[in-house]
Image (tube, rainbow, N blue to C red; front, side, top):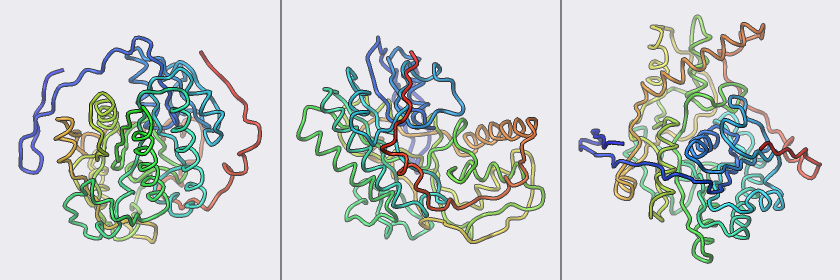
Length: 377
């Protein structure tokens, strides 16, 4: 793989070449590996010769099991015995398991996700230690950052040190920050290398695009595809974010795991965009020009962007896929999904709206009940 150059903040940045080492049957466990990001990482590792065990309480909607893993454990990581059994013999453990979604889910399910996510993080870390894993990856989030540093839509970029003193916007971010510290403590106390990346709004094909747990890119694409007169947008549309295409996210995680970087790093692009521009970008793919309808809804912080100084220093690389390129691929994948549902006779006329997911405790109530275990070799 050759080196590639790009311009970042006025400077030419050369992304160092990287070839993922051959797995040669090395066993790895990926918690939450049936989810969006987890399944893409699992698929890449399996293709490169790693023996991949995925453990998740949900099945993947968009990939067959044998496409992304060798063993699928359909069970609940909030039970320590499940985590331990899944990690047996695994050299590397990846924690991408979490109750999560876009703002329409996070804002109304804080108690459920804080309890579940803390339990998952504790169990996978302890399971990795008990099973003698040499490396542990934790998927953190930009939601861990201090809310006071995200009040300006012209956010200059959050440095990793900006997470302290702590003041995350919600319990999702607070749990991420706590789990980071717990992982780092395990790394100091035991013979296990810890790698942590704070994801910045990862999006792309083969991810959740409807139902209330989807994130902004998928929601905007779906609404633009199915709207005929106007496109709804929460708030004033001036809130800003940077977004990370799934291929960049996978590349960054695997580069980090194969580096000697022990620092918590940002994993995101520095291309910040407001939501109005983001929707207009989605409309441009099919030359649509509909007015925006501003409605009440959860909008999160006013401005968030990634500062990539540390990742460039430590990995000689940073995410480089532009919003227009990544969103185009996402848009047309979602369009295919919508058209497939229409051919199947499903009702899609409500896909031009987003919803706030009401507080649900179904996952909590299921804990303790027998979960059917299945292993597909």
